[in-house]
Each structure stands twice: as structure tokens, then as C-alpha cells.
Image 1 (cartoon, rainbow, N blue to C red):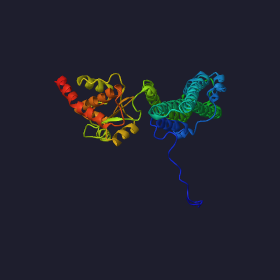
Image 2: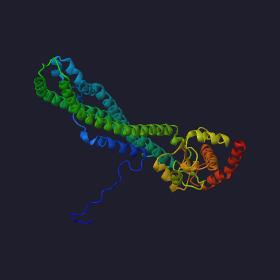
Image 3: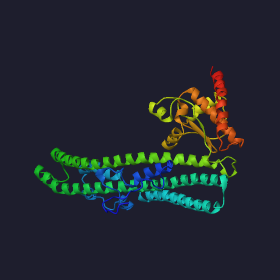
Image 4: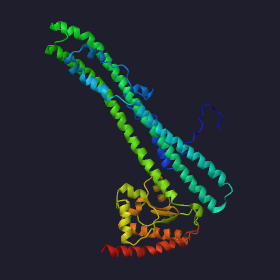
Length: 397
């Protein structure tokens, strides 16, 4: 390496979660929330305390003290804007704290489980030990993802509350400016019209209304920026909710499997390579059958395919799809279940062949016949495909 101080050192782009799919997705969305990129540029950044949601001084109070009904009617839009931004900081703080507690609990569970796996499996050798550690690693990644998501939710709740507080302060200051301006101009307008404060000519009322409209437009600008910010934040919250749901599904799938009691080597994957199109080509061309559980169930029933209660997942993540294409496969089966790629759905016969093929692998796992010599296992699965296709054709007619 050069000692030249002008030569920049290589910075690795690989972080703790690169390649972990859902965990990486969770981190990216979380970073997008924490860097405040969702906040409209008009409003600057999020900072301060939730105490800003409670306002001790009402800038319109002095106008109400004047006791002039016609004036109150004209300034009502300003009061409505201030009231709409009134918040409940205690409730917001409680919601944010709840998500922080969930994140802390998930982080603690991750640390304790990771330590237990290291200590208790240190002297486990062979396929069973590797299988358990691999399985535990997947569970740890899922729990880590949950901690990331829930921590981001805590920040989002608190950030939204702080942003509302910021806009309320801005609106309050603008209304205070309006009151100060009105206090100067109104006596001039009344004097010009030759009337007292208790009365108002149409001209004076119109002048007040025009002044109110000017400040309403200023206030609206900031409220629209608040709406825009919250809409962007809501989109990120939707992404987090989707990731959290998929993490829960992953944990549920992992909990149904006990690799310590499995006779199959955990690292063995068995594949179906039916069809003319790759997974990427099916997605790019937007062709094929609906990639849903209902589609899988309907064609499995017509072909008399029995997955024996093993979970069948239609993969959606870019990592899983890229992995299948790397293997030249449309589906795969391991000790945890079956994964179907987009290419499995490219046409009816391909789907039937794939479902039948993978069901044979499920049976092989169930019978304890999985070895690292996968050639005979794949030959058996390919040999069974035609029978499933014939059954499907009969039932379809």
C-alpha cells in the first residue's frame, strides 16, 4: 500500500448486514428514517423535545381579550390552524418508549442467544453441529432485523411528534407576528373610517380579512410541508411493516424445523430446473401465472402433489431470486421447506413439473435419504415429473 497521504484508503462497502436480505432491507429503511430525509426542506430538521407540543402562550389570547365578535370571526382560520396542531406529548412519548423497549428486548435476546450458541455448541462437530449453528444464525439474523425495525419505529414516532411541535412553534410565531401587525394597523383603519373598535365598516372588515388571508397563506405553506413530510414517513413505515411481517414469517418457518434432530445435512439444497425462462426474465417480461399461494394450491391439487405440510414459499426478495438464477433453478427444497421462484410460474406445465419435482424432494427429506450425493435424488425427481403432468392433464379436462 502507498504511504502517500493523498492516496485514499479503500473503504469496504460490506457492512454487518450486507447480503442478509431482510436485515439489510431493514437497515436501509431505518437509515432513511434516522437521517431525516423524509422531512421537507422547508422545515429543516427534526430536533428538540416533545415538550414543544404543549404551548403555554396562545398568541391570539390578547385579541380575544378585546371581546370584539366581528374580529374573532375573521381570525378564526388562524386559531383553527393552531388548534389542529395541538398534540399529546405524553402519549407520543409513551408510544416511542414502547417501541424502544421492544427494540431493547430484541437486542438483549439476540445477545443472549448468540452467547449461548457460542458456548453450548463449541464442542459440537460434524454435520449436526454445523446444521444447528447455521439454523441459529438465521434466527439471530431475524431477531437482529426485528430490533432494527422496532428501533426505527421508535425514532419515527418521536420524530413525527417533534415535527408537529416544530410546525406548531412556527405557526404560533407567525400568529404572534399577525397580532402585532394588526395591533398597529387596526387603529389606523378604524380612525380612517371614523368608527370605534366595536363597530366595523365593510372596508375595515375587508382590510382585516385580507391581512388574515396573507398570514393563512404563510401558515399553509408550512402545514403543507408537514403533510408532505408525514406522507413520506408513512411510506417508509409501510416498508418497515412489510419487512417486520416477513421477519415474523421467517421466524415462524424456522421454528417449525429442528435441525439438531434432522438426519439431512443442513447445507444440501435440491433444485428444479424446468422451464425456458430464468427468474429475472419472467420478472422483466411480466409473464406467467399469478405468483400466489392460491395458484400453488390449485395446481398442486390438480396434479395430486402432496407437500405433507411442509411450508411452500413464493420467494420475493432480490437475493433469493438472484440465488436461484445463479443455480439455473426455478425452485429449491431444503430441510426447512420449498422455495418457488418467479420462473416456476412462467406457464402451467412448468409449474406442475416444478411442484411435482419439489414434492419428491420433500418426500426424500422425510424418508431421511438426503446426502451430499444429489445426482440420484435429482434423477428420481425428474423421473417423477411426467406422472404429475399426466395427472394434471386428466383433471384439467
